[in-house]
Length: 408
Image (cartoon, rainbow, N blue to C red; front, side, top):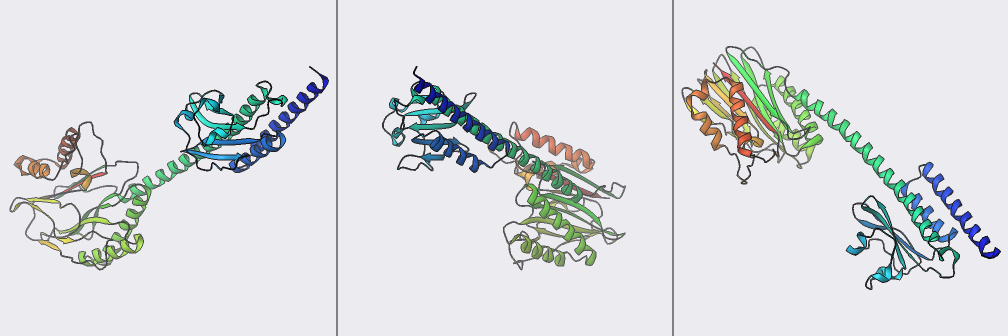
């Protein structure tokens, strides 16, 4: 080996070491991804005199992050399926003619069995001392690995931070939702209320409540907001606050529902809606006033009139203003009854054959005399067990809320 050749190799190694130092400093300085790609581009193009290059990185899909030396730009090129399986340095002559055969070799950047990136290099001169052996190619591979792994680590940290932030948001929203539900429910000789809540996710959009109005009257309600997650929980929190405020101002359900409808529409601009059922029972007068706003009709079972569905009311809240119709249901002379409310997650649970649980099974269950005499907790357990058996190996796809009230 001549002195001139040795000198050339020494200069190349010095350039490569300087390039590694520059890249390492950039990574240590936590430069953004775009800056790392620019340094990578400059280092290979200027310092190391690479003639043609295209760097494709797999994020959610393949995209070209660095490209130079060719007339064609590969900003959103789709790689041939064969390229995605490359694990070793490969010559392009092994592939049929395509846009990428303007390059000479493919250098993969892999982690275990996953290809993270592909470097297409072209314009290699045979008499260039960098490429008379594999050292020059391996350096490009090493430099590419350093850059891609650093960027992957950035993505990983970012995803971890996003997950942690989302987890904290979920915890906050879950706490907010728990505040929606009453801490305690009455369970006396005269009045018994039982609630069961089965959230599909950590945070849901169901709401139930029991609100004493005075010594003779109380309100019981159940609601379901379209959508899931944090927005649904926050929306329902606002709805609950509005309901309780309005109830302090007036016991008139029609006025309350009209005001709630207006507020939901104002807050969501018609993009979400709430189904809502509310009933006010007067213990002294033995009367029940209720409004059903597009909600699944609750079941009312009393010894005098048997079983009936409570359907009178209006359409869903938040869809339009004013409501196109609004009727109060009014029931008199009931002092011994069972009221069973639920959200659509119950009846819309699907089994392995694609069939819904449906309301018919509920009606059949409450037709039996012995059901009426069961305590509310047992009734809820019976229905949840029946639902679990019905769905089989299928999962629940929505929140399920059950609220029962017994008077007498």
